[in-house]
Image: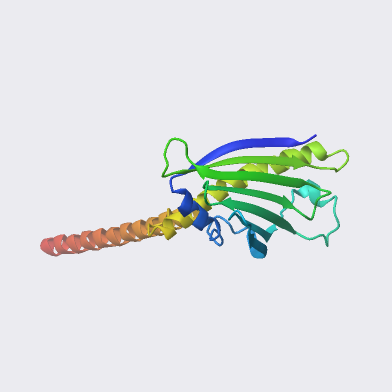
Length: 219
């Protein structure tokens, strides 16, 4: 049994801009799980299509119940192969990705097609398919459920990372990450608390001075 995912996303940037950003996605604040990326093959076909193969290394944090099934020295990184076909004439880019280790635990295969949005030629739509499978006897269903949930979470991070890089390439201020927003809120709260403390000290000092003046009047 295989878990299947089908989804569609839209980036409010042209296909050319998305194509350029695709090769510059890493690093970004949403891709801290991506450790390395290397181009291992690239060629231009006679019909002017660009073929590429990249090797990516990502962290592979397993759920606790799965860690008990593997030795402590098992690699905690997963190696991903990514094949891509770029057709500039028709403005399409198709990518295929799959993991080449930990395949006994789980295999995640993904296919994405980037093309011009049918409603707005200045936007790009992404058609995404994924297949999650496991050959672990007795727990394959649980592994697949976990893998599908993680995949969906990573899709969200991928899109946020894309938007971040696109904003930078277009000279715009990238939207702040949740961590940055939380940090700013914390600093602002500190400033507010400090200001309130100083105001309270000032009011207390004025009240003490006024009380001393009143006491002197009765002496």
